[in-house]
Image 1 (cartoon, helix red, strand yellow):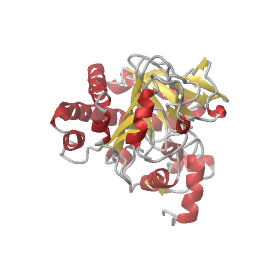
Image 2: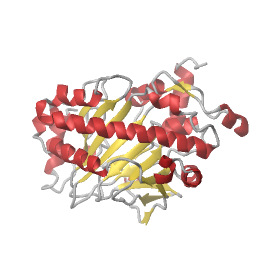
Image 3: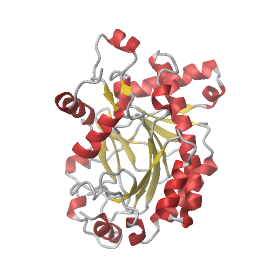
Length: 359
């Protein structure tokens, strides 16, 4: 399906009441959330300064959250709030472009990078009520990867957008690597254990725009899924719409103006030998307000082996998942499987049946 043909119907939904059939979701996916998730808001200020008591306190809160649902928020995270505002301004400029302009930078077959209208390039039903712009970030080269991406795909008009998102991604990558230290501490392993795995990895940056929807009870901005990546660092605007499935019910994650939302993905679930949960979450849509969010997905270097620390395996008495590389899981979710709550177990079955074991 051509996302360029689909997108006008998404935008026109502001005027017309009928949700196109390929955007409809079954009722079991649409149960409304009535409670707020009691996820900790972790102050990283002391941790970033090296305060031992603050480090232990933060790791305790993170451990509790990750054992229960895999979501927490962080404040005093070191990311410039003005930089976040600037990134939103550039993002707004992009999504307000005419449809033909956005479609001109659509994802190419086999590529993860570019514009997508409702992911219609990949799926034909249960489409998400959103537009996205995705691009890569890595810091293992002297070239400004994001700046160059914007310049080569969107041209001079978006040169400053590229500079801003280069800075934003750099800040997110630095924070993400720091969070791997806190996660290691919370698991009782060497705080630098995971660092090498992520240092040269190519991470994913995604800007999400959720238009208003006249019948929000029939559609979803993002369907229920667990992130296949390691750690997601999300900034959501103040509209709200992020839900988490915890304690057998959907619960809302309320926006905090100065906080970043962090959640565990399937890859880190494997890196913790299944101790830390990659939680099911979704995005709902709003009848009256558009919503925006920016998600940074921290990923390991593609050829590095994903395996939990030996001390965790010894304590647990078993290794829950086979060794794999991030490129294996990426291939599975891009070519063979639509991410949901069962991605990791289904990936494990696929890996064992179709791939040689990683030694």
